[in-house]
Length: 379
Image (cartoon, rainbow, N blue to C red):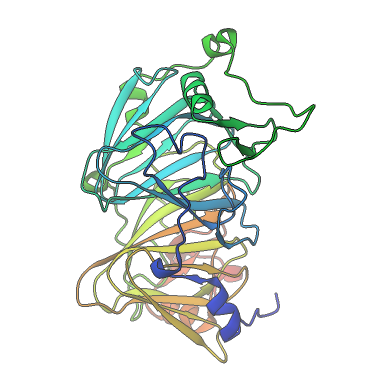
């Protein structure tokens, strides 16, 4: 495939720093509900499920998924709602209590920094900040068009008492602010009990299997072809889907289709991933540490990222990354699609790995070079 060369301007457009995040405190219908009225909602990649026409979106390019965030003071709650597509919570700071069920009493689990939870579609869920005020929760939503959300019946009824209604096409109407409901406008009504009764139930044990606790992650010491080479050395934990691992023995915590996959990378100072490319869209989000991302094989462009910063890497662009900080760093990788991500390594990486006795087999996994057929050997 031809090389995709990323300009300095394009790199800047796709780099979203924490300082670039713009919150909206009227993104959802519960924005006036006491106990939920101090939420800050963010949309970095795609509009997500925001119901506010004024929601700021940092990057609107289709990725096959949406990435946003929720920040709220201690004790503030994101009310019960239901999604049509996958919703993944990534807690990078603080502590959040996740609850689910039509009335929020089917079960609850605590999410701490580094934990990732995938909540099934078509069940009600909500969460409360039970940690410090500066807690931070990223969200990854499946598909470009999420279809919006369905609010719990009690949420809609209480919001109506504060002058807020929701149209059938997911637009917020604020009658207190002077919005008028045009004649013939179809408004969203609370879900009928017969449909609530038909929703699936999840036990705490079942939901627990959909949470990847940071202190219980399984790490591959050699996830890539370059893992033993200078410039390589990162460790990888597959959380959702098989994703980009080249370790034959690595399995993800969560298997079911999401429309995207997600994994943690962990690197000591100076470690990283050597030059490679992939066809899937990719977003890199820094949890902690300082990271340097370089794009292009010729005319390279480089950006340095810190905590909460992110970059959208163009499809088919060459990229490499490195921990440039003084301590161990962690990076979340989100790739589009439900299938495996097949990496194409720079020819110099392939040669160096062959000299070290390693290659990639026809199934895309690292294997002893001496055991590969001639068609898989390149020097």
